[in-house]
Image 1 (cartoon, rainbow, N blue to C red):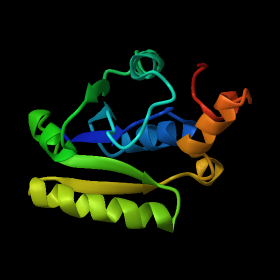
Image 2 (image 1 turned 180 degrees about the vertical axis):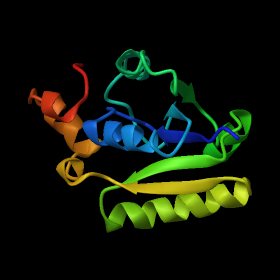
Image 3 (image 1 turned 90 degrees about the vertical axis):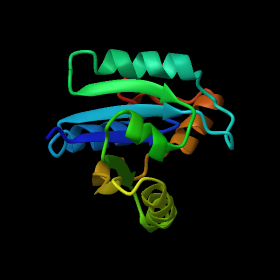
Image 4 (image 1 turned 60 degrees about the horizontal axis):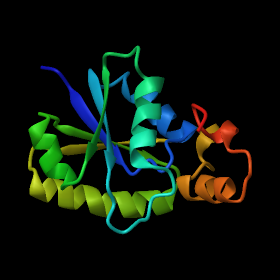
Length: 150
């Protein structure tokens, strides 16, 4: 049986912390679908199509990674893609509290869906998309936080 995981997020932007979770997730799963979602509660800083292109380009040589966009419930997306796992990264206990609630609802909506949490590697734990957006907005150099140039 092929183990497929969806790694959902707004990825605004996709950081080295996200990359860390994807690469480590490949040690567990046969395929990871990076699902760039439209979040109705957030206004994007980086264009979603540009981000999708950058992530696709970054992983173009890895056939075990697929990059998609979506605008639906993550639990339903998993059914469409025959994924039985969600992959999520945790930087701290605040992330856990938030992600735990989401995982419970996803499990309620899709009984076959398991959420797998990976603790972000220490060198990436302080990287946060919100902070990267703020640094970028005011002209700061964000290159050390991203796996590709923007």
